[in-house]
Length: 231
Length: 80
Image (cartoon, rainbow over all chains, first blue to last red; front, side):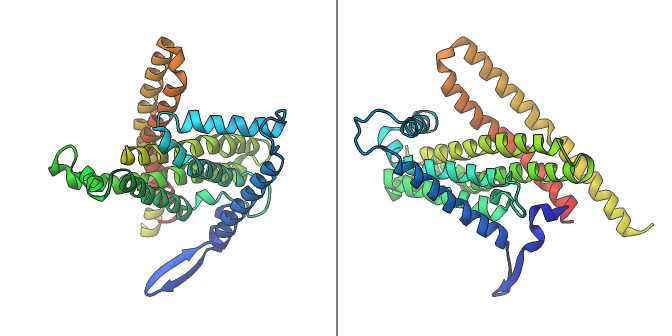
């Protein structure tokens, strides 16, 4: 059953006594998704009129709607300078996670969601973790940022440190578990019970709808973490 | 009795119990979150967008333990 998930293709080798496994399907899909996104966005950008006073084309209206969505729905409530800084990161994160989630729905052989591999989701979560410290230090300076670990009471320092790692871990595991759970359920139903119609519905629900919700949640949580550290 | 068969049986049983009990908490939690968000939206419809965003974050956090039990169940079935 797991061949649906491309797991048997993982390459295993040892580096310095530590066994490393990585899955070329997932790696190439993760890179392919980002290349496809870049192509799509360049195509969208090429169609935009260079003159800001030109009558609104369809593509420009879609871009304007998307920008407004990100600004109001995802970055709403942040201070304007921080929102301005986070805007490209948030758009990239949301679109990348969304495209990764949706890649699993494609009716191609070996098309799995890269986000159902823990390496991808934990990598994204670790990136967000590093960025929380980056923006925290940038906004408050090293000392005041580190002092945040002593809030509200100094004896809560261990709890704050554990909470920091647990937050990042659950950030990655949440996306991973949701996407893998949906993919497994679809694979089990398609393989054992109802091969034809039901998997299509499950794909729409778990692939498209839950993929959208999870991309939104992942981005919102990243913004919430960075905001908690930077403000 | 064959010990391997016992392990086989135990892991399916454990995965079922893990997912079944693990789903109670997130279910109750998300229900409470959704109910209170609906209350607040009915009281102040103009706040609906902000409330929806906060509700989705809270749902995601409440769901985390359910996801943990899902991961444990998947590991039990496919890895152990």
